[in-house]
Image (cartoon, rainbow, N blue to C red; front, side):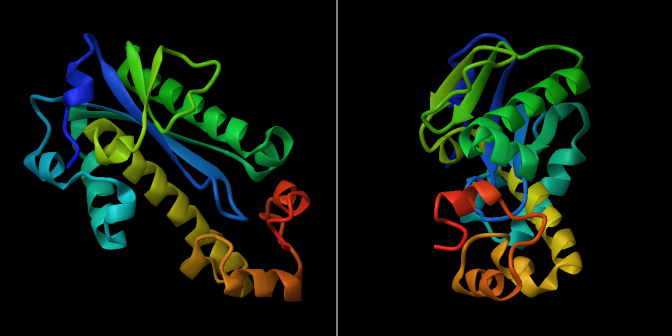
Length: 208
């Protein structure tokens, strides 16, 4: 289970940063940055936070609401990079742009700046509002990154559910934009929507 080991190893305010949506064929990529007050964090978050992929959708929704409703015990920023930015920059750079925006949003909400951002994975953005440290599988190790993974995942899933109501043919309420057989068959039948990533088509992923 994640804990505060990484956060406590560094003086000053430390946030966790994670993204959701690098792999799908459609939709934006979302990111979140989260700072947790280690002394005032509610017990439900202390014991419930985990890698978003290990949690049910219902549990993620519950923790999402708890994170947003915990007042000064949780400071956060949520941001995204659009499909147009993904196609222009590439998915990795767009993910990093979303992370940068999320940290800046956190700083604005908190009124102070983090002294370190723990980044899930092994690639840190080249330009960032504060120093960074990569943590492989960080969403299973750091409570701050786990919180960020939940905020990013739920935000993006809700976006795809809203888009599904406009474009029901692609089954986004079930696949969240990922390249399932159902999704690829719908693209072959109906063509891509305005929310599909054209750069993925050039890489052979959209129609391959």
